[in-house]
Length: 205
Image (cartoon, rainbow, N blue to C red):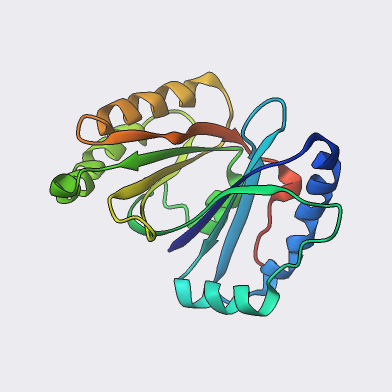
């Protein structure tokens, strides 16, 4: 599985237009290899947004990107903070829930950005199974995934989907991050719980 994570800053004057533009991604629903797309605001002030799109593989994603590359409309701009592509190295699915169904059910997503020393990469990946076996017992947990960022080998995204946005899963996820950082440096760029917007959700047709 391939994850595309986009984070961006949205000018105050463009927030309403930005929200409306999320509906323009309907073409994704019929794209070959598309699994799901979800997103939400990273802060209560709605100045930063994140969208996560899931694909079966990088080739099908690239074909779609070449055919449907969006052109930015005048007066409707936003500054991309980052665009990351990451390939899945481990998935924890204790409830037999595939990615499409997980994305449809999820009300929030927890994203942690971890930079791992190169000499400890193998250990980091191996240790995730034990960490996730405990996390998966938390109320609201749907699915977890560990993905390796393509542009930066020592960097991983740790992703978990939850069926609620209450404090319980935040505590569970924060505890898991603490365990992971015993062998990894948590990058300050992103470590947050994102309430998902229903209007931004795109599922296969």
